[in-house]
Length: 290
Ligand code: AMP
Image (tube, rainbow, N blue to C red; front, top):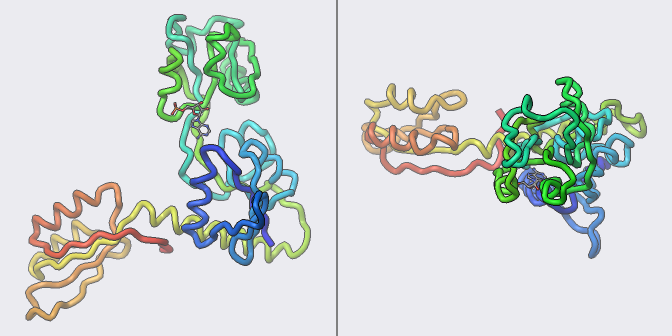
């Protein structure tokens, strides 16, 4: 059985569970305090802290794991990314107290103290740029360090930027862009049936990716005048072009079915309407395998 490490709480846990459920791998808890759970027939989940997942996967306690790229990078372990899961988007950013006047990296004074819970990435970022700073590791909530007089500058995760603003901090530079990833050890330990394991990992990646692909697309159906078909094709390029179905109305209309990007579906609908389309229907897609 393939063992998958999933975050037990925090920002990534709900989105991870939802993605797995959408892929048909619903978490079936074993007992009250679900530290492990069955995920379909071939997979088992263990629930651990997102920060610990890089270690668990690198050490072989789990075959694959879901955690933030920020934590994977900070762990410095030999891990590979099998899939970008697209949720948990954030950036690791350098931010300075507004009243210090620091607006760019060049304004940071030599020897400045920088509070962060990402000391390795921070050391590397400033080291590469030959900016001599003193990194002060904190275990979390680096944004309060300036209030405590620990440091004027922080390196912390930013999503909307509201935490920085609330704390009077200005974003100065980006250290790393992050999303949740499915990870595996760069060189997985060879035990049991390696081929079966590889197949299970491939199936898992395929199932998750088919859900992610589907989330960005919609299935659109409409009845359009047959003499507008050329223009309809231009509006609905789809994956292999729209499916055209005859209607029993004497041939004046046809039904078209196509897959179109969700982000611009309102424009697609408007364009179809202007071509005389009727009975337009837009639905979500559960999975998409091209
Ligand atoms: P925001 O105010 O939306 O910019 O969020 C910033 C706060 O949320 C900081 O305390 C971050 O540590 C935390 N945060 C934001 N995004 C993430 C993420 N993807 N994973 C973990 N922590 C995050």
